[in-house]
Amino acid sequence: MKQAPVNLATYLLLFFVLLASSRVLVDGQKCKPSGKIKGKNPPKGECNKNNDSECCEAGKYYTIYKCSPSVSKHTKATLTVNSFEEGGEGGAPSECDRKYHDDDTPVVALSTGWFNNKKRCHNFIKIHGNGRSVKAMVVDECDSTMGCDKDHDYQPPCSNNIVDASKAVWKALGVKESDDRYGFMDVTWFDA
Image 1 (cartoon, rainbow, N blue to C red):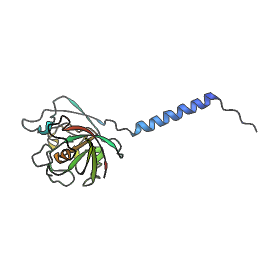
Image 2 (cartoon, rainbow, N blue to C red):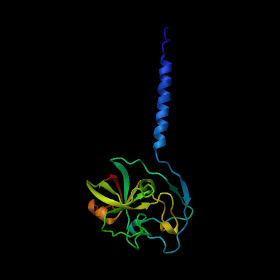
Image 3 (cartoon, one colour):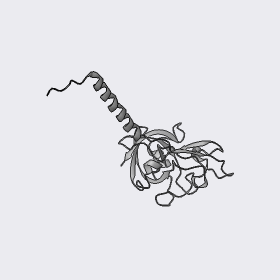
């Protein structure tokens, strides 16, 4: 029995179907916003503005995320600065152990998706930036799903790509407080 030849149109149709399918799979792996929350002004003196922290504004909408980008050997992130000490802008004790941590200890908080329901608690990550690297222990979550309330020190939700680091991490990366990048710098990281 002789088979009918497959024409060019059939091949092109198959190609476009496969291309569209792969595009849907790739898009499904991206982290997309989960919604928005409406900001409200914090009570007087309730929002800690240390380390250039931002306070919520009444009526402004803030994007929230339940996910973070995929983790790889070179996960791109924004490094921010936080004080994990009592009275620091981190507010409450760290999520992993309900303790405060000294600013001279290399510790971090990760965005909600990366924090992964405490699965990274007390694990170390390696952060690369400014031509240097440092190991830091995960002790807290930088909440990407909530904010603008007392529990979050009346600060907006974190972005979904944040590694919020103690001053010790910045020092180990050789970035001084006088540097324009201090408090907000592009880095990569991976599980150590």
